[in-house]
Image (cartoon, rainbow, N blue to C red):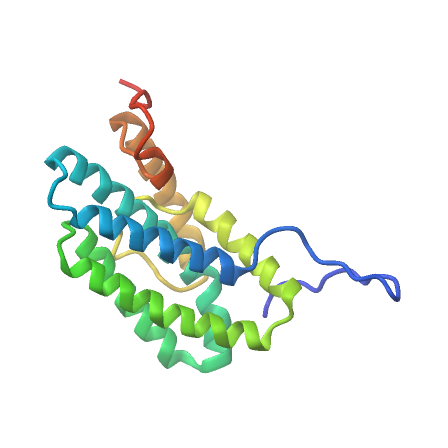
Length: 198
């Protein structure tokens, strides 16, 4: 990994950084995305509710892919080579294009993405100390807070350019979201709608 080394600890003292493992963070997001796909496929929902769920799904997936591309894929590239990562980046671009008008095929693509990444995470967990997994999880969570909330298939997907472009796009996306009252988090789907600026 390219993370700076942890400071030394006295002999006999075990220390672990605070936070969640990258495995837990990304697996939890995969479960949230799967739940949103199930909600989106419900034939009984109204068109307005379908649009809200589609917006939250697009925002969740956009943040998720951005963080994976910034921090997970560079580590996997060093472990497994460029082939696996380049396939995931290409699949991520296809997912972003599909998210612009999500249909039934998006759920299949997201399931395939989750299965592929969870295979990578299993290999990473087997070869990486727990403290490093937590540090990587912390970086993923921070990257998601600054990530775009809308799909940008033509944005850079590899460091260092995605670490510059994604936060800039994220600022613009969050401004648009604030002005339109667009929901971007699954937890906000059932909240009262009082978040619109105008």
